[in-house]
Structures are given as C-alpha cells and as structure tokens.
Image (spheres, rainbow, N blue to C red):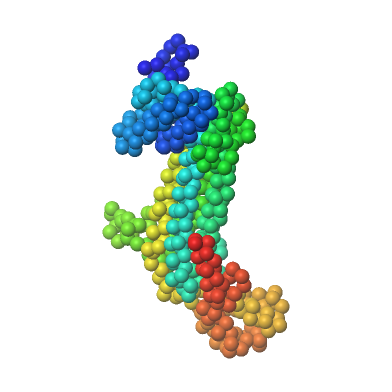
Length: 457
C-alpha cells in the first residue's frame, strides 16, 4: 500500500531507507499517549466546527476501539507505516473508513509526536516520584531501627569520626528528596502543550489550542509554534535529573558493596538480592548494587547522546529528532527498574550493629574530641591539634588505641588531662556530643527522622 504521504513521490521508498527511518520499533510505546492526544484533538475539531460533530464522534469511537485492540495485543504495527502516528491513522481508516483521514486536520506529526512525549514524560515522572518515595521509606525504616547504631564515619575512605548509622543512611534520603524536588519542578516545563503548532508555523484552521491543552491536563501552551515542535529541553532536563539520581543510587550501591564485603561486614544483603559463583560455592555476590552502579553509565550516555543530537540543529523540526526517544525510554526503564530493586533491598538488609561498634573501638576516630576537650580547658586549638597528633603517633607505636592509654600516658603530653577524658572518648558519647543542627547526635538524628517522615506524608 502507498504511503499516506506518498502523493508527491514517483518511486517507492528504498527498503533500507524504510528500515532506517522507521521508528515504530520503539515509539509504539507512545500508543496510549498518541490516542489520548488524538481524542483531545478531534474533540476540539468537532467543537470548533472544523469537522462535523458526527464525524468527530465516529473518529473517537474508532480511536477507542483501536486502543482496546492494542491493550488486548490484537494489533501488529507495520514498519511500512513508519511510526506510531501513521500506524494508528492507518488502523483508524481501516476501522471507520475514509472519515478517519479527517483526524489529522489542523496538526502535523511534528506537533503530534511532541505532544505524545510531553504526555508520556508527565505520566512517567509522576510514577518515578512515587518509586523514589518507596526508596525513601526503606531508608527511613532503617534509620528508625538504627538511631543508636554506631559506625565509623569516613573521609577519603579513612575512618574519621563515629557517626550514627541512621545519620549516615539518611544522607541518601535527602539526596533523593532533592532528586524528587527536581523532578517536581521539571513538570512545569513538561506540562506544556505543543498540540496545534502544526509542522512549524501553526495552521489556517480555526483551532483552539487552549481547549486541547485543557482536555489533556496541560497547564499552558507553547507561545511559539517553531519552539513547540523543536523543543526537547524537557527531555534533556529529565535525562539530567535522572543522571543525578542515578549518581546518588550508584553512591549508595557502592557503600552496600563495600559494607557487605568480608573486610567490612557492616551489613548483609538479603539472599534474594544476591547471586553465587559458578566455581566458588562460598561466594555471596552483591550483584544488584553492582549492576545499579553500572547502569548509571548508560543513563549518562542517554543524556550526552541527546545533547549531541540537538547541539547543531537549525529550527524547526529535523529527522535527527527521531533519536530523542530511545534514550528517553531507556532512561525511564533503567530508573524505574533501579528504584524498584533499591527500595526492598534497603528495607531487607541486615545491619550488623556489633561489627560496626567493634570497628569504632579499633580506630582513632575519637581523636578530634580530645582536641575539643583541651580547647574547652583553655588551650588554643592549634596547640591542641599538635598534641593530639603526637598522642596518636605514640599510641600507634605502642600498638594501643586512645581508650587504652593510661592517665599517666595522657599526662606525658599535657597536664590538662584528667579522668574525665575517658568519658569524652567513649564512642557513643563522641557520636551523641554532636548536637549542632544536622549533626549525628541522637537528639538531632531523631529530629531528622521526624522531618523525613513529614516529607513522606
């Protein structure tokens, strides 16, 4: 059968060209949105008297019938009809006859596909926000169970200061909260209607763009028809936001890999999120966090791929823009899949509290508190810092930790030390002494948990 646009051409399209230019292999995922946009468009056409109400009703009935067939898996899309828009139009004409050809009055595939992607991303962003909140809830559950759990905090992957495990993991709650805020903010730019912009210059038909925007739940319309069909900023912004979120997911995944290793033994992941070795029967491999860490790279690739496609395009629409969809679909699926695994993996992991506590006792992460102790006794901080450095060096040479030093040994370095130094050096006291806003002290951690709960209400 000839192309729906084939009137101007004297030759059939080369088969290789058909395969190169066809997008139905991936944009069939927009079928729901394409029909939704068409239903709003034909409703407006009828209301404006551009087509008869009778024809509009027949087209709507036909579109709903096609939608049902697609949902039931009764439709096979054809490469010959290139994309989801032409496939559905062909199905519509087959369903109700030539009247179906009136559906495309006053619009172009250029504004049609842009509308589909706005609708698709609007729906997916709202779903992803829900998945982010599921992950936040898993983090919050662990925080509630571990407000008193102590572990070494790290800088440069070297033990730095004792912190609450709840405090540590809640850092990821707030990262995800910012991710959620970025997604919510991006909806302002996603929720704009390009429908009715035509190919690039608008249309001569007396359409009502505000009406189709209203029917589709958009907040506004593009004010410039050329911008409407050529804008892909909203997809770039989504891919950028997704990349930042995947970076956060990757960082948390890295900690899970490290913490679950034999060297750390701070957590154990549930068996359902791990795999074994084909040759080493003792192995329990953290494959899920490893793969989440790796999949971050493909989301970055989707972002840079689209930026590269768009960087040299003149206005308005160009066929290059067909390359905007696969990366968007891939990122959506990667992000959704990652979040669906991350939430239960966090919620079901076992926190090895005793191992964490023992690790804190076998380091010098309480050294800063000795400096604070001496400062409170009147010694300038820089002098205190030098004294503590010498004490730590001495302890290392004596194969001791700070709590293992005697009062006489402390007094070798300063007469300001008294018996109360041992209370100061207790890891739990070190952790809970940090009651500044946002600190790791228990009062602050409980306040943080309260604030986190309020964000999820």
